[in-house]
Length: 223
Image (cartoon, rainbow, N blue to C red; front, side, top):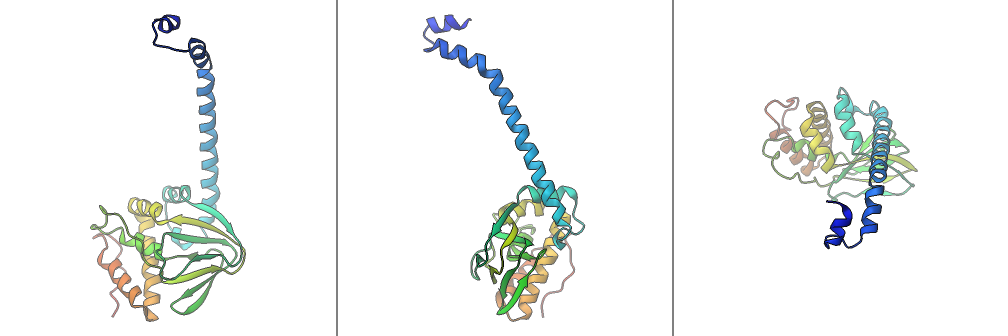
């Protein structure tokens, strides 16, 4: 049925507008496709630019290009001035920070530690991600671990930020990355437990007890 017939029958209330919409529709579709390609290209460039830094971080040792691209696609790059509080002890760990430039001062179990470029800050997120690999956690929503540390930028900093909610699905999907996360989480809480943190000790044992049967078994329970 022709457009003017639909208009006469009362199905269309503005025939000139309808004709104009139909005339411009191919142009609009073409513009949307062009915008979509531009966004995709920008996203690919963003991912590739981040991946080139990953070789500096032990988290990505031996990790596949697929896993790296998944992580990079969910990362945010931020620049923060000196004196910015990243998080405080007792906060819930929602994100991990990878230091590209500058220094971050961390207070771990009463000890001051300076995180320099290519260090990571907010390792509690790795603890949560490691626990998410357990069979019991796979079907449940992962809870953030409480922070054991406080972190403040000691200089102007450039950081990569990755949230727990974005990391967990990648850790579950990519065994190579998951194994690294597990190893580094155990190292982190084991070190804190050695300095008297009872909560870190409990977290360490929880990670060990929740391992997959085929997961890495490189640590014994703390004595």
